Structures are given as structure tokens and as C-alpha cells.
Length: 136
Ligand SMILES: [Zn+2]
Image 1: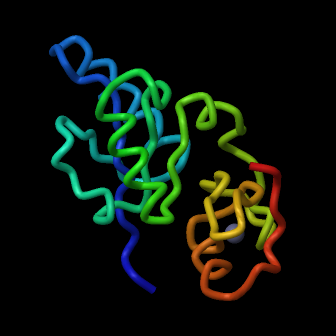
Image 2: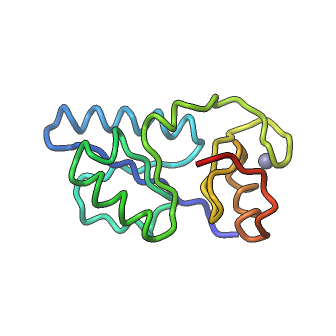
């Protein structure tokens, strides 16, 4: 299995205050999703070097969100908005193996999974479409 990569957090970083807001959000994402994070400060980021993209606001809140978010989707990577990060409890049990831990909805080729570990989702991606899924 490949080493776990970071997720790219994208938002409006036009001013130092904006950047501080996005950075604070990124720390929250790291804690909730149990993933390393990197804050995008310009649109030169290569989204394929990341596990996925989390938008600090929505698609429309910054040019970077629209551009990098679209690139992530085009690369078949997960791209979620801030509201989606907060829509799930961070202490749920893994739907795949049943253990507690850092579980979160994961993006697969077939859609979003129920909350599960990153490693469990990785196995599902390789296996097949037998994973429990929830509507996108
Ligand atoms: Zn699991």
C-alpha cells in the first residue's frame, strides 16, 4: 500500500486574514478526517500529488476553489466542501471493519462510502464495488 498522502485544503487566501481562516479550517479538517493537510496558497498546486481536495467554503468562494476543485474531480479524486466535513461525526465506528478510530466518508469510483478508515477505503478501492455506499 502506498503511504498516505495529504489532502489539499483550498480556499480564499487573498489576504493574510483570509489565509489564517483557511489554515485554521485545515487544522480542523486534519483532526476530523485523520489526514495530513496542506493549504493551497495559489493555483499552481498539482492536485494529483494529494489524496483529495477539501474546499474551505464552496466551489464558488474563490477562483482557486473552482479551478483546483475541478481538477480534482477530473482526476477522479475526492473533492468535498466544508459543510460535508462537518456533516459527519468524527468518532463513529468504521462501517467496513467495525473498529472505532479516525473514520470519515471516503470517495470511491462508485460514490461516497459510509464512514470508514482510510486504509479500509483503500482496500475497497482495490477490491470491488461491494462497499456499503451512501448517496452522493
Ligand atoms: Zn476500518
